Amino acid sequence: MSKIILPPSDLMPRIARHLDELAETLGDVENALGDILPRTLEDRAILRLQTLDQIRQSVEDLSVLMTLIGQASLSKKVCLNELSDKDTQLTLQSTKNLLKTAPNFTQTARDVGNLDLF
Image (cartoon, rainbow, N blue to C red; front, side, top):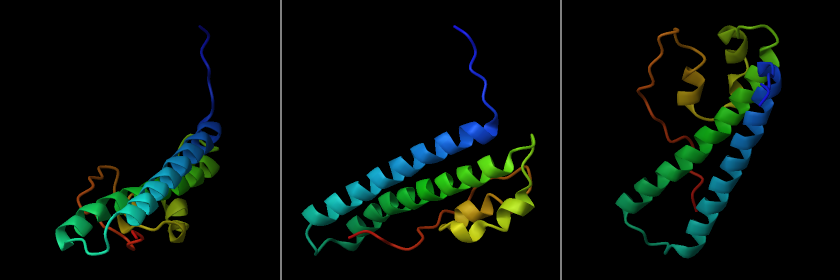
């Protein structure tokens, strides 16, 4: 089998499209749950369902981020400063933080963004 070699600028858009499709599927699941669940859910159940919404928003953000990286990766390295100037296209602060931290980044905070469930 021969090796398939692609520059990151070609691969990143493929990954971004896939992540976008996954986010759309998660949105469909959210809507389906909203259609079948009673409107009188307990607070604890609603908070647990918010996790699904947070995952969808995070996948959407990663899709945007992959697109931006693909556009910026014509060189072998990506300038975080240039990407962080475009962070208004991202929803979650946790995704924006990926662009503003040192190389030894560790993710600690998890935000839920705007609740779109139901």
